[in-house]
Amino acid sequence: MASLPETFNKIVSFLNKEQYAYLIIGGMAAGILGAPRMTQDIDFCIFISDEEIKEFLSKANKAGFDFNEKETRKRIKETGAFKISYRECNVDFLIVSTDFEKEALARKQKINLYGIDAYFPTPEDLILFKVVPARHIDMSDIEKIIERHLGKLDKKYIMKWAQKLSDEAENMQIYNTLKKLLKTS
Image 1 (cartoon, rainbow, N blue to C red):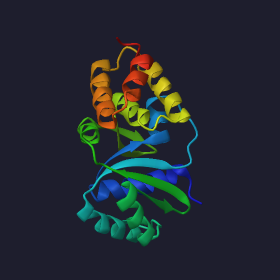
Image 2 (cartoon, one colour):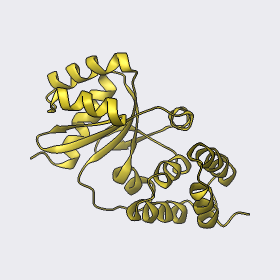
Image 3 (spheres, rainbow, N blue to C red):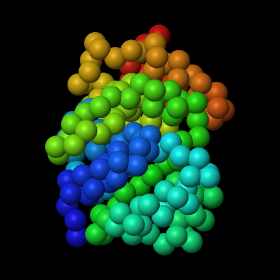
């Protein structure tokens, strides 16, 4: 089994070489922008069109990543997400589909991790990525990101997107959760 740093270097090198637009989200990003924590996989938001998926999977296969193509294509069609692996270490992808995700890419930051430059969201955007699923671990990550960047976060930006995401979901939970966490009025 490949180590997480080894898999990170392999997948980021691949994405950078092939010039795919991406953001690292999930536990690894939370550890960099908030507080370190254990994670068993690497999560990406990737900016590829439906037409590019076949080529992406072909290139990933040639680069040494494993996946079942039929199952992967089915999952992409059903969920807009897919998983590949490198020597049994999982790499999860969420295919971009929202205006928020597109704006997050435009605001990306380059961070060198394990000796390679990779693209991460801003702290504000990672908070917004994590508030949507709102699992216990996501809420803990959000609290740690807020704590680490206290006084430096663009709360107006976060609340603007929280309102839009809540409107799209027809559920004010996203907005209300962030309002409480950021203590805004």
